[in-house]
Amino acid sequence: MAHTPRTPRTSVIMPVYNTGERVVDSIRSVLAQTDGDFELLVMIDGSPDDASDRVARFLARSPDARVRVFDNAVNRGVSAVRNQGLEAARGRWIAFIDSDDAYRPEFLASMHRAAAGTGSDAPEADVALCAHRIRAVGEETHRTRARVAPGRMTGREAALRLLADTLTPYVWDKLFRATLFDDVRFATDIRRAEDALVVLEALTRARSVVVIKDPLYDYTVDSGGLTWGHLTPIEESDRLVSAMTRASRKMPGDARARRALASSTTLTYLNNAQQAMMIDGARAPRDLEEYRSRIGWGDIVRTLRIRPALGAAALAFKASPGAYRGVYRRYVRRVYGIAGPSQPAASPQPAPPLRRDR
Image (cartoon, rainbow, N blue to C red; front, side):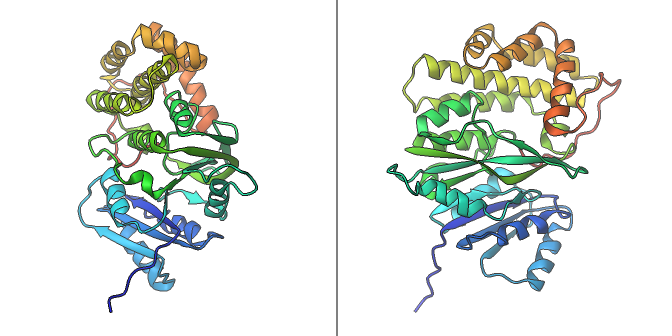
């Protein structure tokens, strides 16, 4: 008789690329969960460093049947290997972790407890969301970050908040009911903020979302990572805006939805501008002008109605990119603990390979 693999409560999907120095610590953080009913899918994405060897050596010393390793010889991109993980996942719930980050020991237990709604009459939530802690590489201190107050809301409410950037767009600080991914996959032609699109798709399908205040995810910021070291092509951001627009149409359209979508669009192109400011280089003025042209006055007005600070930032950038550079530099230092953009350089700086979204 053929052996039927058991169904774990949770499938944890970990894409791995160029994180050899930290991937074993990330794996340890999953194995240290107080809720041990999970499988960990380690998706090695043609990593050019020794991540594959380090994972193999660790598991040879500390074998664990809950860990399944998919060692892809060719780099396919984070979206493709996350999709590969979704196809292979057997769990009733899905969670994600990046391979240089870490779960707190109670991540899974606390998220499941929150989703179950213990002690309340509310139905079990389809998505649970926690706060997270930020640590810059080389620093020992963490900064706690949470965008929304604890409590329950409908999937539509959560989707509107995501569009308005008042609910985090990441997959790694959430626990999802697996059925939400029955017809949802990561877009392989979008390499920055691709998880925001997937989260939006999941939220539009969710009945209930629960938010807890506990910072259960430790997120590492590396100034050489995707957000800080690479300029997203404007065409890719155009595709993201179009995809977010299509996904948002699954919700009833009203003034609030239109304002939330305007906020999302404004933030997408403002993020492009921020990347250009971090990289600088001879192309920066031309790039910044292109991003300015994508941010419409109508979107700024609608954004000001629901996100005054974001709308004001877009207005400042539209009026004076130079002045906005100084404001953004102080923001990066305060929130992420790393140096913000300097004055424009005389020549472009090389960007490291695309790796992950932040």
